[in-house]
Image (cartoon, rainbow, N blue to C red; front, top):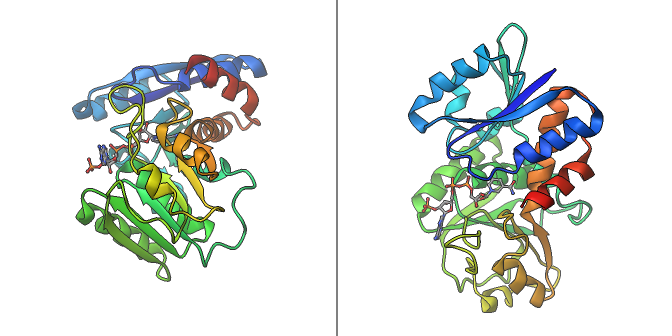
Length: 281
Ligand code: NAP
């Protein structure tokens, strides 16, 4: 019996319950996937609830990805390096292991689009929040040696850069002001990690302008981790410039699939999980 769930606040219309429930059903595994919604100041109670209720696997999302590390007995090396945990495995003795599957999800969503040798190419991240932290680590892992962070608070970007530089010394990370008309001619891969373009108030907005994207070389790539809508304004502009694009939903599906495999030790039915996410978007 796999008692699974997602811990966060607010959880609203999370796609994870749909994805994981359909994966359990598809494989004929007995179990459930529940929302565990606790306000930010009640993390300790949430962890107690998770242990007392017999959960064996839990995803962790905003705002708990960093603070949950205090309650975890063992942290795998990737999660340790990133400083954030998004997956908990709870053993029968109550001991918790923490993982970070966001990096796996982010990198595997490229499919075969990333060339093997990236050391002469420059990547750029827009934003410097929680997702940017994991993505900076992923880009370093992928082999980029120069990464620009564009954000409205450059001091925060420098802090982020310093954390990454503690792990790898031979990279250059620049903290720059986000301006919608930034010149992107040296950028090979641009990743949006802000909610700009997301459904609701931000929908229809783009962190950079069409003319900014037109400065990119034609082999450039744009990755928007916003997954609703699937084609954000940024991706729409990018496609009109002939740039390759990657949609955020694939990262969401693949990080979930990796969590599922950690919990069940079975191969995740990725197509079923993707379909379920699309149907409930
Ligand atoms: P977060 O920790 O709150 O960080 C948000 C970042 O966006 C911060 O750097 C923030 O800057 C910046 N930002 C917000 N509004 C902005 C604006 N109007 N102009 C400029 N910068 C702005 O959130 P997160 O966890 O990183 O998540 C960010 C987005 O990624 C969300 O839309 C989330 O749904 C999505 N996401 C997708 C996946 C996936 O699997 N596809 C995974 C994780 C997250 P300040 O600090 O200056 O406010």
